[in-house]
Figure 1 (cartoon, one colour):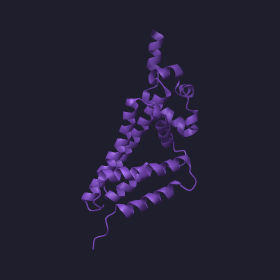
Figure 2 (tube, rainbow, N blue to C red):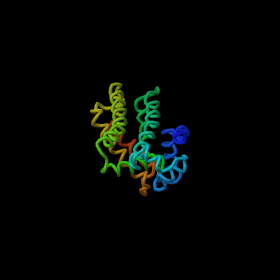
Figure 3 (cartoon, rainbow, N blue to C red):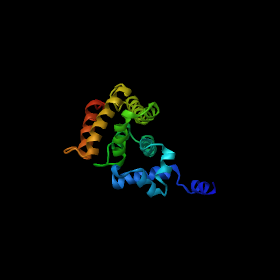
Figure 4 (cartoon, rainbow, N blue to C red):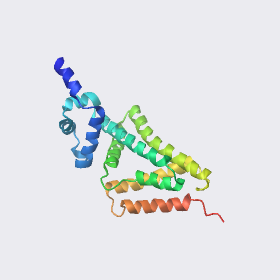
Length: 204
């Protein structure tokens, strides 16, 4: 009993385990992230990891939630800073699109969604919560830009859904390394779409 208590006290925190999982994805790729390899990295047995996370699917979802929490904080800082709605929309788009082929956050996102066909109701609700946060922030920014006269009077919720669908499609192309769709090309396409469909025409 005393040995088990010492092991619990010395065990890494949940955040440390999730950070280590994300680092392994970034450095070695998702295929190298096994319970045994992660356990070795954080000084825990794979059995202990399974005790805390129950399955690899749950580990991946919690790691995605942890990563999204960090992105959400960054998104909040970008969207509440001073500047025009257009400038903050550009910052939102920059944050959304993967940095490169094999971007670890998008690699994880794709894997979690690929596994979601077997997810239970709780897992699907948690995935929807991740998507909902991005959607609500974008819709609120669009509504602000419309009220300021920077954007055309579109329906913020419907436009946000369409813009995010465009971003998702292009982002997947970047993440998987589809030839001819690198990050800069994607950003150019999206900004052109925004200029054509959202920006208010110059006054006068």
